[in-house]
Length: 432
Image 1 (cartoon, one colour):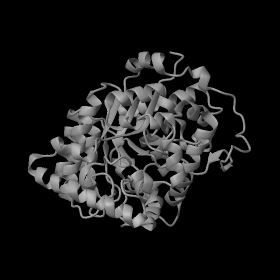
Image 2 (spheres, helix red, strand yellow):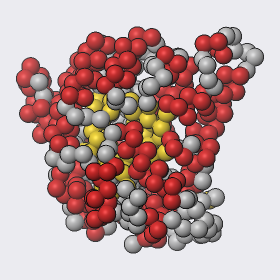
Image 3 (cartoon, helix red, strand yellow):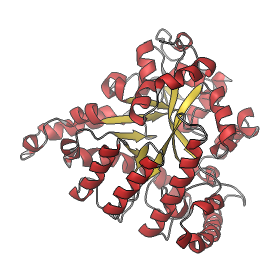
Image 4 (cartoon, one colour):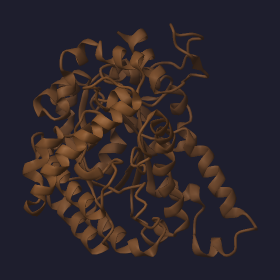
């Protein structure tokens, strides 16, 4: 076994400027797409106006406060153009190798003016299931090309719109044929029934047959309208919508019918999992539930252990200290490149802080081996890259020490960074 850590990010974001999706749009939707690009610009301007943002500001300015944006943009890696890796393959590889990251799982983006068209992955007003399907297909084609530029080191997550199950099954097969590694399903689409509905069974059968895990990622909330208040509400609900499929799949008997189905919950934290599993287990064992133990052979925590994973992006030390309750072999670390709330460009310092007190075996699992198993990376093929750019495992393993009582200008309690903004300040003030 190499003494270098095979560091795999289970959460990265990619996408070109929206207009550059044009060649990937189905021909029958090209005129509609041209109109969409203009309508999207009007939508962007109205969003900024409603929030009091200066003309030209992008979504990152709407999502985060001025202090955080200035801090993020002032870092040399960001000021030097490192964010261009969101669509520039060579620049992306340069930035990630500098972080010791040898492979990553890729999701759509929306912080950099590059979200999939027509709200295929993230909230957008005045759209339809047909338009979202067209946008998903355009993104999937672009992503397949982008992943092919670095074979074996990028696992693309295809957007699948399951309004028509037969179409969705075909999209799953197309994703597999294109070399994509997972399926992203919508979580806040009010046109869709919940995932406990048996109508989805052919879809679950298809992803199992193709060997593709299903991933639920934060951000797919319903459109909440304009203005700062809408953004604040949306950010609260990011997490609820993308966690909701867990209890739908468990109590809907989906894991019982499809025991080989793998499901990951990404960029939505990890500290919610122990308490949620406890709550679900209590319901399972409750005398108020009729016949549940006859239909479900395991308690919810059992299905979590056998079928579920968490893409624990920008994981805090406090979350890591719950690893036994979450399941060490279910945790997948992620950098969330190139997002402001992620660990780039401080990933090595961040993982050393996060994995404080973990054993080498635990770190190998959480930092790469579990993600490789879930998303199909070849560890033997990645090992030479890790030996060239990855950190030595001995440089990451440390004796457990209590978190400092106080970081400069950072609110810190019980070892847990209190929020994404504080996380960015922690990395900036402590590790540069």
